Image (cartoon, rainbow, N blue to C red):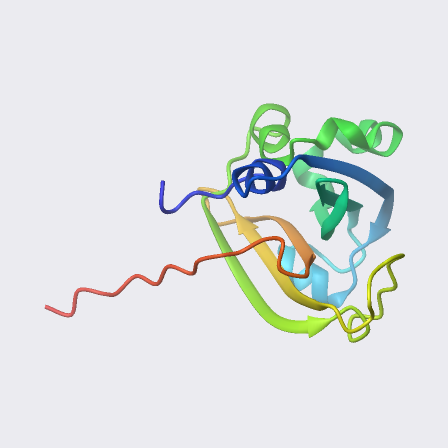
Length: 169
């Protein structure tokens, strides 16, 4: 479908690569001003922060940092800290464990380099091109359910932007 949000592993697989994910770290953090505004929570509210590396044929393809508000997770907040793997695949986790579905996503994106993002990866030239994407995902009630900052490395993944026109009639 044209307007579908797809999990990264499925996206990588559809591009012809063998996908994998490694959860690098998971922690509870307090929402700062920017995240609080993005997620419609109070400054200081608890969030889960998950840092993951998605690979394509063993090569880093997407570095993701995802923030999820505590209200959405309920009892799973502590479970995620103990076993972050339960969040993958992420969209299934949201649907089955949190009873949430991504209905809309607002994304801001721009080109950069690994060096410009202050990222050093073994075997990668610091001038390697990246696509930085910051997403805020919304449920059917138009409530933000997660924020995700991603670094898409090199030209492994390709994206098509679909722009819908309005009926001015």
